[in-house]
Image (cartoon, rainbow, N blue to C red; front, side, top):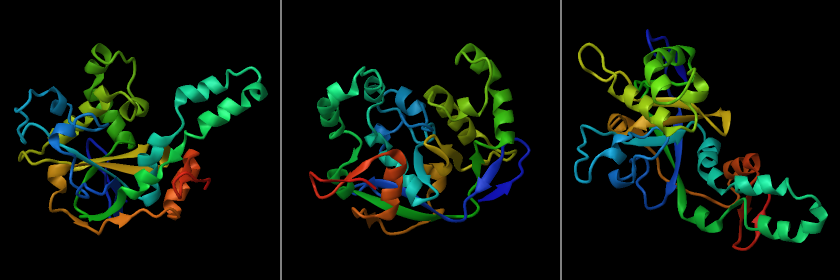
Length: 259
């Protein structure tokens, strides 16, 4: 990635390919249909708040999520298959693990598995982004400092925060992340032209997995898509993501491989 020094927000461009795992019926780097958008981490919240039939294109944007590597793209997607967090906590409460060995094993047999059905109905999409696309780097100190000043009042009054830093900027609270995305989307220069085309942020699953949230209308015509590729059971990047996340891969149906 190429870093840029901006007066307000730190930005990057992405010269290499990006990757995205989608259902085979979806259209690669197209955003989700408007009726299904609005709940993602950096989606436009107005998509959910607008009355039915009033979501005009000028007032709302949609977001296309992708990653800098196939491993990260897999990881961001298959993380949904991780063992239930509440179950993991309850297992630590079992006083005599040996007495509960059989039921615990039965539960784990159906948890933490990348299913064969999921693998065979999803593909990996790849695209080269135009190098003039400018993404706000949410991990850059300049970005954090600027947004801290911009959102100080709302952070205190509405978000119940006493400080604002990267943990809030890239955390789980959708009120914050979506408000930041909307602020970046509508930021314009003196001529009224948009300054930025999306966001770069580290994955919550690991800081070495770079992720991107691209504003769909600014990605259109500014990327070169490749051909979607089927996901094989022995795909090394799928295996690496599964290994990192502690998942097994179902193949063939009813059999499980530990990467």
